[in-house]
Length: 77
Image: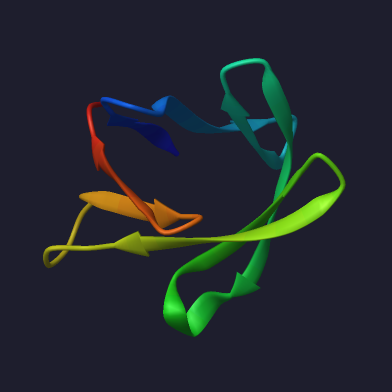
């Protein structure tokens, strides 16, 4: 869970709600599911198309950033 920002693409947030992981990216929102746990990847659906979100970690703790659709976002909270 957390919020990530990229100046041209805005914020994308992941949060746990009722035992499920969800994302919100502007007006887009929906479930997030594990795609490849070994690679720290989730899958989200945007406009009917599946997209892989890859998280980047700097040691232990929360993800420092993520990449989706070739765009890198940095963690803000």
